[in-house]
Length: 232
Image (cartoon, rainbow, N blue to C red; front, side, top):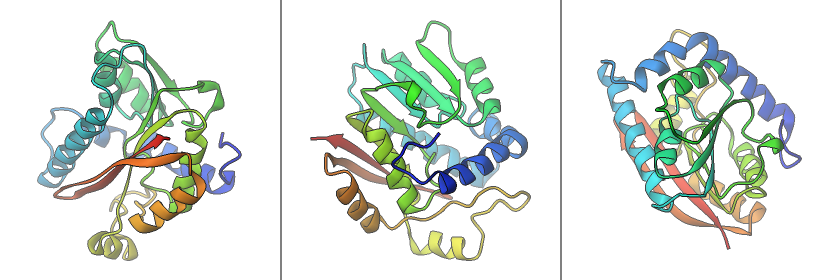
C-alpha cells in the first residue's frame, strides 16, 4: 500500500490500528461529531474547529473546480468531498474505515461526481490528481512518516493541502502523559509535530513543492495546523 517513499512497517502498523479503531470503537462517535446531533461541550469545540478547518482548506482551492480531479485522502464521513464536488470537482474520496465511508455515501446528495473508496490514500491505482486534501488524516504519524506520505502524494499532484497536530506546550504535555488517548479505548495517539522540523524535512525531501499557505486553527480542544504544498 505504501509507495516506495515510505517505510511500510511504520505506516502500515498505524494504519491497521486506525482502521480497527474507526470501524469497531469510534464509528458512532464520529457519526455524531460530524452531524447536527447534540454533543458535549468539548466535542462541540472540536466540531467547530473541524468546520473552520474544512472551510479554510476549501478556500485554498480554486473557486471553480470544474474538470479538476481531487483526492480527499482520509474522507471520513465525507463533508469535504461533498463540498468539493458541489464546486464542480471530480472527487475520489477514500478512507481506511469502511464504516465511515458507508456513512459518507449515505449522506451524500445525489448528482455529485464522487467515487467513494475504502482503502489506502497512497494506492497507485487511484491515479493522478490536480489537488490532494488530507484533513486530519495524518495526525497520528511521526514527522518522518508524514513527510514520506507527502512525498508519495507529490508524485501524483501539483497541490497538496494537509493538516498536522502542532507541537504546542499543551499538546506536548498531553502526549507525554498519554492524555491524547481516548479514556475508554485504545485509539492511536495524536502525535504533536514541531513545525520547524516538518518544514526542514519537507524542504529536503520535496524541493519541487514549496509552502504556498500555512495557518493554524484553535477551537477549544481542537488544535490543528494546515499547510498547502504547491509544485513550482
